[in-house]
Amino acid sequence: MKYRTTIASSLITSGIVTLLLKILPGNSLWWGIGFLAIGGMVLLLRKSDRVPVPEK
Image (tube, rainbow, N blue to C red; front, side, top):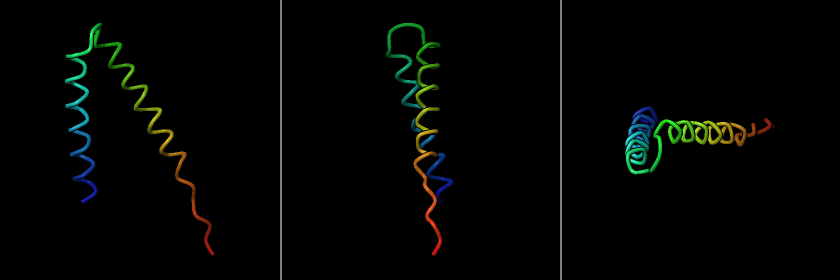
């Protein structure tokens, strides 16, 4: 079930970013690079938030 949720959220996010690239002024290449950088930072921050729970 998580697999379907991941695919759905990925497709929705892609659609939103595509619409934003059409709406935002300027070259869409730079906006795309910016969104890619922000996404990478968010991914790294979410990975670092997962602190393992010590076993008893």
